[in-house]
Image (spheres, protein in one colour):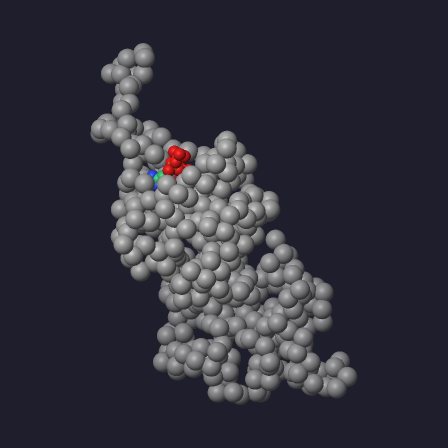
Length: 400
Ligand code: CTP
C-alpha cells in the first residue's frame, strides 16, 4: 500500500529507550511511500545512533541547531518547510514540557515552534513520569494548542513496571499517521457496522457458518474511522485485528447480532450492514454433543427457523439512520441488488459477486441507489472501502 505516497515527514526523536522502535517506524513509513528526514535531540543519540537512522532513511540526520551543512544555517526553518508534518517518536516528558512552554533550546524544539505544518507527538515514558501532574498539564496544554498526541498505551515498561506511558507500537503509529492524512467527510458522524459471518450452533461443538472473512466490513470500519467517524463494529467470528480507534463488539449468532445492533443503533447516523448473516438457525440446537450412535447412520435431521433481518429492522425504525446494505450474489447481481434496495427500504445497496469477493484482499463494487448505478473498479478492499465511505458521506450530506 502506498498510503503515504508524496508525504514528506520530519521524524523527531527525543531521549527514551523506545527510540529503538523508531528505527522500525522509519522503515514502515518509507514502505508506505513517505520520505523521512530524521532530527534527533542530543538525548536521543544516547539511545540509538544517527548512523542507524541515516542508513535506514538514506538522508543525513540533523542533531544540531548550528549545523553548517545548511547554507543559510537555518536548519530549523529549512527542514520543516518541506514537511507535511513533524512527528516526534518517542516524545519525552522533557520535550512535551518544552513544547507546552514554547521553549527552543535545541534544533528539534526550535523547529517545532517555528513550524508551519502539523505536529504529532508520541509520548513514551515511565508511568510515574506520565502520571505526574506537570506532565499531564503539559500534555493537555499541547493538545489545546493543536498538537496531536498519539497514545501512550498501557502495558509492560522497560523499567519493569506496568502502567500507562508505554509508546504505541510502530504499526499503530503508522495507522494513526495514515488516518491523520485522510480527508474527514464523516467528522461528527456515528457509524454502526456489522461484519463477518455469523455462526449458528448445531450442538456445542458443531455450527453452520459461511465463507465471509470479514475483510470488507473491517476495511469499511477502518475507512469510516479514518474519515473522522465514531465507529462501532459488531463482528461475527473472524481472525482479523480490530482497526485502530474502532469499538468492536463480538457476537456469534444472527440473533445475538440483531440484539447488539438494536441496542447500539440509537444515536447512529449511519448503519452499514456488511455481515453475511445466516438466514436461518437450527431449532433446538442440542445442549450436548450429538453422538453418532445416538443419531443413526442417516445423520441428524435439522429443523430451521428464520433469523430476524437486521438491516430491514433498522431501516424500519421511526428514526432510522442512513442505511447501507450489501448484496453478495452469485447470479443476476443487478436485478437482485435493485430488488433488495426496494425490499429492505434502505438508501443504498452495495453489490458484489460473492465468488469474486469472499476471502480475497480485493473486490469490485456497484452502488445502487436513487441516483442509479455507480461502479467502483476492482481494487484493494481498503482502497474501495475509502471510496465507498466517501460516497456514503457525500450522499448523507446531500440528504441532511
Ligand atoms: N442482512 C441482515 N440480516 C439478515 C440477513 C441479511 O442484516 N438476517 C443484511 C446483510 O448484512 C446485507 C443485506 O442484508 O447487508 C443483504 O443480505 P443478503 O443475505 O444478501 O440478503 P437476504 O435478505 O438474505 O436476501 P436473499 O436471501 O434474497 O439473498
